[in-house]
Image (cartoon, rainbow over all chains, first blue to last red; front, side, top):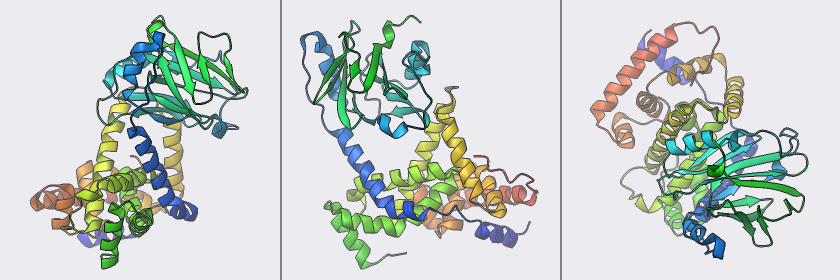
Amino acid sequence: MKDSELDKKLAAARTPQLDADYVEDFPRLVFSRLRTVRDEKIPARHFWRPSFAWSASLALVFLFVGFGIGHWRGKTEMAQLSTPDILANAKLINETVAMFPNRVRAIIRNANGTHLVLADKPEVPNSPPIYVRICDGKNCSSLVTFSGQELEIAGQKITVLADAGGGIILEGSQFVWSNTGKNSRWGNYQIEAKNLTLEKL
Amino acid sequence: MVESDDEQLWIIHSRKGDHAAFEKLIRTHQAMIHALTFRLTGSTADAQDLAQETFVRAYQQLDSFRGTAKFSSWLYRIAVNTCLDWRRREKRRAELHVSWATNAIVEAEAGARDDLDEASREVQAALMKLPEKQRAAISLTAYGGKNHAEAAEILDCSETTISWRIFSARRKLKKLLSKKYSSGKVSP
């Protein structure tokens, strides 16, 4: 092939046409992501409870993870809390976390697949992985995260806290849920949470 | 391409947190950045994600833009580094033997294939077979309108290195594109 033929071929190759709505919306998407990045950099609020003393020191890392069940309706599989979940596999999670020391902020499973959320630097404190699964009666979604991380569930920011004894608290501005309490429900959502290092491997 | 006083003003105002000014910078350069991220990834979904990430990084690093190079070159440099970082992350993920978001990626690539004519698919498939630094060099010069000196600055290497990468890339592309692609498959 001659140089001129290659140049002709290269020049004729186009990239996919971007959707007009996407192009119009693109700056807003950038600013939205910028806000999320800023939220991640906001210093953590201090949480203090007698049985969660060590958790408070881990709240230095502040993660904002979109976890909106509402968006997945009609897309995800019909599921129950008892459905086997790859994220509840402690051995797999521990191996995954070990491959990215102090960088795994969360592993999220939703309608789009399973996603690993990594910090740019090894700044996530060592702590036991926490498995959280939430169902709204039709659909379930799950994630693995760490004590001190912040999530957004149904539009509400919730901080995940854990102690060494397996106690896990999800604390929002309007509610507190604990896996040691009798009620596993929060509004329309049924919640399951456990400390994965306490699981049998 | 706007390389004007207006653009300088937008940069100054953006540094002060003026989103309207930064939006003008985004609108001016978004097409070129999307084209580059697609050339480097071969995936529409990843290209869009990385284009957003490029502008987020650009906004955060605006203070480091000194105006000695073109703003477009500075932006290209961020885009290339963002794509290279992404490629490294993808390689590490692949080693996990777990199909993280495999379905989403497959769907995105299928979408990209549908949207391209056969000749464009062949070229993109050939580009994806190049080493990433050669792919970046050929993308910047053949599609980004950059000369060797500008490409060298963007990729942080010497002009000699750029010339060699482009020479090697063109030699491989000639071989790859001389063959008949029966499937027109894009293989990232």
